[in-house]
Image 1 (tube, helix red, strand yellow):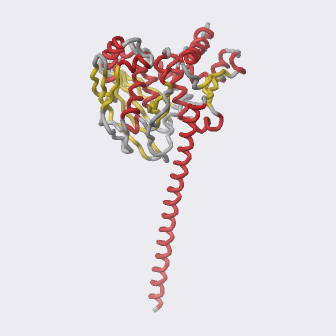
Image 2 (cartoon, helix red, strand yellow):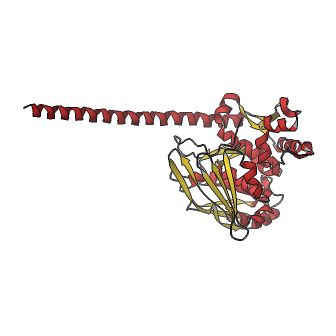
Length: 379
């Protein structure tokens, strides 16, 4: 069962680069704690107090703290079991919560532009610090209906996006990669037909973009819950490339979906059909209806769909099967990962052999020295 394991990075692997020349069906986007927890925090900006309970019961391998800061600011910290910590700061949570359905889509869209237009080096620095796109592109992906509405939307959203800061620590083995607290996007220039965002040069962007996944272009035209479910599927897909290579897909528990879609608890719920099952079904139907090309199929486990609600939530799951073009991408990622691990293990074994050889030579030299000393004493 796929769980929320974003911070469980493999310390043997080199930082990834986004795939270039992707088919028009999808685009690259950074995949890791900043993307995942950033979307969760933005989605929950209207009720951040629910986050510790919703994500703090151990299922997601993370604990959450929410603290109020100056004015209407909030600090939301996600801490993994291995000590990884990511803190997201909202300068004005009320402003974001009033427009969070659009902000979360723009947040992911901007990160996709980072992957498209900027190269992140191995030391976490950037090849450039500006990204830009036309208002027409926001219309084309289904986020807005017209250039004028995109312009008005971006005028408002730019303030909120520049007001999002991050800070944190990601552990890789005994090593830690830290990023100073600062805004991801430090400046925005919104024109009628074009918008530019400036990125922070003070952050370690390997923390922001340790891995990359793909997302369908149609994702930005989905309803809020359709977007949440679809982005979660592709986030988990990047974490489960080995399983996709073996089975062509993955499974996601209903419990994880309920938390990610911010659905109410089944305990004491007088109408779980309307408040739990129907929203999940609506999100699935939205994805199936909006996508011009089917990139994956979603099926319930029939053993639990008609079960009592407690069993449906705690034991049920969705089965995701990826179609050829999408499965191919994750298969290639897994193959590359396996080769990198093999190469890293060979390098590690070679280093260990060299250490053993040096130790053996040192011991042999020491014995010879001691032997010569004993011979001298005998004389």
